[in-house]
Length: 97
Image (cartoon, rainbow, N blue to C red):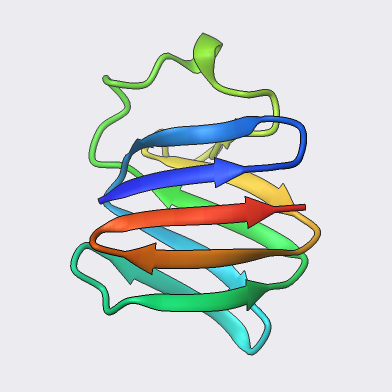
């Protein structure tokens, strides 16, 4: 599935991913390929981006707010204050604040 994380200042992340874990207002939840369409509010927390491999991502090209996880190079994290998420047709868009 394709994930795009956008802030008012810039596009923070845009790539194919295996899954994404987000801080929903009722708790953390994960979306995988072929997830049902959803629109939800997000709260302060960390977005976890799970990729199959990091070989297609060059760390130098990542936005400064996207940080590789210390324990697993296939996981990237982005801290957000709030936001909105939409998933439809295997495309996830996170509007992050």
